[in-house]
Length: 290
Length: 350
Image (tube, rainbow over all chains, first blue to last red; front, side, top):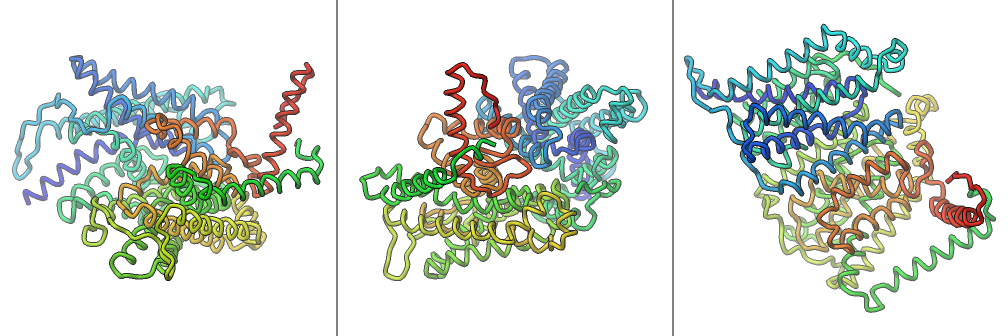
């Protein structure tokens, strides 16, 4: 029971990080139907910036948001340079461009920070707390609360502000949204910025929880994408639930089956879900663009 | 199009001349005291050629963006290495077995890929590649994990041992040549036309009675087959296989071979493999930045020339005589230059 509880909490913490990363990813997909391959690499890049800021003794209260801001800006640059010029081209073109952008970011990071694995300073202390059979630490608690709060805020913004309404309009139909006087490009930029910002927030939490290394970028893209597919494309709630499910699945797989094959099994689950229910658990049926 | 301004007879002559000189150069290379470094590099290109052509069949002709080619390459490499070192199977059989096993997995992966749209396809293929990598790292009893398999013997057909670079050169040239010729025949046949039709408009192709599932799976199976063959070539050339050679970065490289030269152009894929394999080796200082540069190249290429070097327009990037279009482009270029130097206004229609 205690072991189970440990895995459960581990999974919830991991899941909320994935959810945070997946929300930004899903927003971009919902609007442009573009797999943002650079998303994970932006999340890695921002986390490294946070690491560097903490090394030059900038307090985390400033450095953390600054790094998330830098992540948002990186996403803007990627959108401008790699995605906008090929928007509207045949489907395969923007995807290749996105992969190229991811490669560039990854290798710039490799040149700047090197291939080693670092540990991000644990700004949030990991003091153990136990309630009944549940033993967890403050870091896990903070991750869970912070991730849920950020996501709740974001969903509230999308659901009930004018800006959110415009975003939803753009995601349904860009030309029509333009006719209604919505500046689609502005909205798209905003979505990219928000996606990068939330992604880096997740990335910093992830690097405090585990470690920080170049490869976490690609892994992040895959995890976000898996979460989105599990939960359903284009649904914020779906991304949240999908992220949580993925985190829990991974925690239990590595706890009970095999930690070496954890990622292999979670990719296997992904392929299975794609086969059985390609729209995910909460996804609406997307019209096939033939 | 400038190509139409050219005299077809002279075009044909120029084409045959370029082909002839190229073939003589390639055949003579190991005989003229070429350094081992260059020979090894050209052999590496020959190993990359079947991979590039297979990727182009899947992505360029079939229109399916696969990022798992390295897994088939790896399956081929491991199969051949294990068969020869552990079971003592003769090399030619191991080579074919490597291709067939990769083909079988390609066939299996092809099935789920039919059910999903192109975005999920990419994810499926990456997922497959990652699963392969994780298994290769962790299935220690068979793959020896991260240590890999050492001491794989050189290719041998009966009494013929291909143990020097000069000998391997001709053997691999033959395999790569065979691959090119068979691929050319395939894409020039009804299979190629059906794949292009599916790529251009799946619904219309289905309405014309083209069996989409059959051709898509066929493209996957054949593309994987050649990747497996290339894997075996690699294993017996470098005499080592390890999981680090078959990562997603390797798959990306395979995709770049096909993209750089031009999706849907077989000559383009060969050119892409030549450029991407040899450039980082010739300019050693570039090696460290190769992934950075190739990433930038992908972005720039997609923005300015999505059809690649030898492809036509993105929509019609078919196998329509890419060499001819290269010549036409060179001629156009020189004409434009001379027109510009004479101060005439020249239209950009390349």
